[in-house]
Every structure is written in structure tokens, then in C-alpha cells.
Length: 112
Length: 111
Image 1 (tube, rainbow over the protein chains, first blue to last red):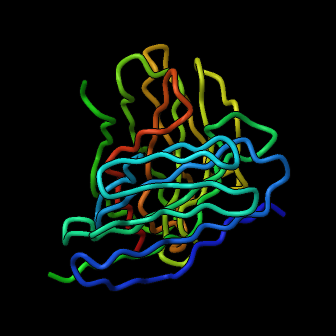
Image 2: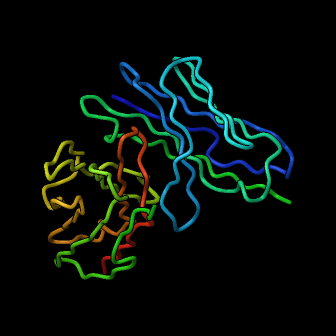
Image 3: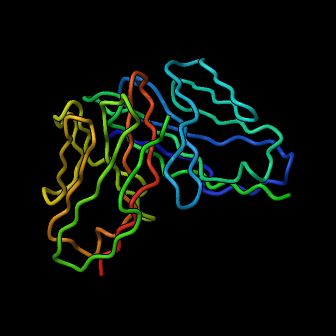
């Protein structure tokens, strides 16, 4: 069965303290992996798409990487405004890229 | 460009009733997907519509249905509501790229 697991469930960082979030998956024939950020009471906000092992994408303090079994979201020198739940998702086959399964997320809190 | 909009934002219904939620995608996006989000199960895929046709379906009972109109706007209907249907219902649209853009959601409470 296709599964996506995120760890840790929650993470508390001091402002400026870098860390990484993990997303591991067991899907046959990975076709891509998405990262989203969700603030309380809002819909997820798209961050990155990664398509193949070895690929990396960066945006401000965030950097996403992909291997054959997992993806990491590295947060460098986080700020309080980075506090949110970070979700990863993979597309399920058969189906296009719109039928995705989400992990349960990592709730990040950055303390000033 | 305007984002994905969903109406209503909040809804309170009684068990046994039915409800219809609405979603307007980003202009030019032809794919609309619906998700249910609960604290226990997280985000779960309901179905996806593309050009007025259901293209993908998740593992939800037949009480959950949807449709898409020629202008790509979509509606989702839940009949015979149960307490367990209380959730945040999210709509997402996608266009030329593979990523999805989510609306703010409709918070449904069933009493």
C-alpha cells in the first residue's frame, strides 16, 4: 500500500536554529513529490515539486531534496513566520498528478 | 490572478441533512480536486474533475459526489450527513503545472 510518513510530528526551534524535516514514502514508481505549507485555518500553500532522486529546489530559507526513498525539507536560520505545518504529498497511480496522498505533516514552531 | 475561492466558509448542518459546497478555481485551471481534512485522518483525496468529467476518485462512500461546470467551477455534495463528516473541505485547482493550489476551505460542522 502506498504510504507517506513524516517525521517528526512536531518540532520546536529557536529562531536561527536550522533543522530538517523528513518525508519517507513507499510508493511504486515515484513520479514526483510535493511540499506544502499550511497555516492554521487556511488551505495548504504550494512550495516545491521534486521529480527525481538527486533533485533539489530552494526558496528563501527552505531547501527541498529528494532521494529514492525520502525527501528532506531543510530550514536554514528559521524565523517565527516560518511557523506552520509542513506537508509532503505524492501522486498515486493510476491517476494524474492531482490524485495525491498526503503525509500527516510536521508542525513547526519557531520561537523568537 | 485571483486564487481559489470556496463558499461558504463555515457551515453547520444536522445529521441526515445534505450539503453542497462550491469552488471557483484559478482562472484558466481546468482541474479541480476536493479533499477532506480532519485531525485524525489528515488530508484525504475525495475526487478530481477535469473538463466536466470525474477523472479520479478516492475511497469515500457514494454519499460524497461532485460535479464540474463548463466554466470549471465545481460543487461537492454530501448527502445524509453523519457526525463523522465534520471536517475542513478543501478544493484545489491545477493548470499547466502538476502542483495544486488550494482554497481556504469550508469548515463543515455536523450536529
